[in-house]
Image 1 (tube, rainbow, N blue to C red):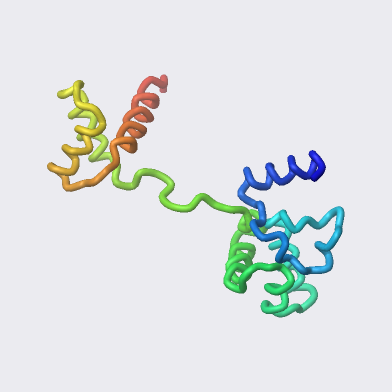
Image 2: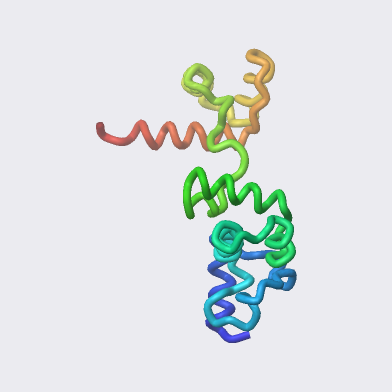
Length: 156
């Protein structure tokens, strides 16, 4: 594999747009093309949506040509309709922030840290579980307190 292709694959992997099954792509445009790359999942999804819309291909045919499942194509259609090309880009799954650490919990943690500076994150987690019936991983507490301390040092 040429070095330029290796770099391209690494970039696709970093961006989350590397197609894990390029060998399943059977669409003629992707066969030995310098432009169309079966490894590029974003390009593949866009081209399949284009084939659906402009060529009148069926979902079943597009799924067979692309190596993608029908549910994946339906989801790509909905994402593209809602957000355009950006909707086809991968998004981080799961919670975007620690949802259990609301302002009241953070205030309590701050008070405990002031009153008991010897307590580490594991002890704070144990106190949260015992007193507030909240199970929060000690590392989550460490990161939240560090972020809060960092914000507190800023001049406003």
